[in-house]
View (cartoon, rainbow, N blue to C red):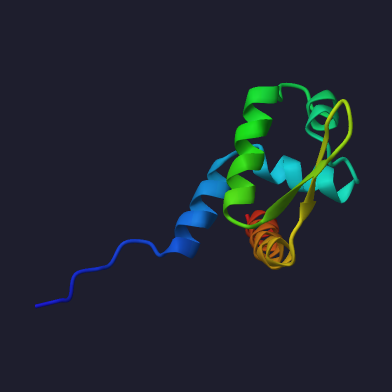
Length: 107
């Protein structure tokens, strides 16, 4: 008799959640372009809404990929930055992109 397969680990759930959100990869591209404020992000991408960006950013903060920085100003200013863990995570996404490019070239 085979052992039962254990469901996805926390890291697999994280990858599935982040990659499953079509806006996460866009957020990473924006951060790479030094666009790190939610309002700027919404203005930079057609179809992106404040509600969706806030949900996406919140998820990324919960997983430790991004860090939320709140400045004590009036009006309040909020920026997001990639954590050291997030930088490691993004290397996995880069590898997946390279793999996808290789698959497309082979077709």
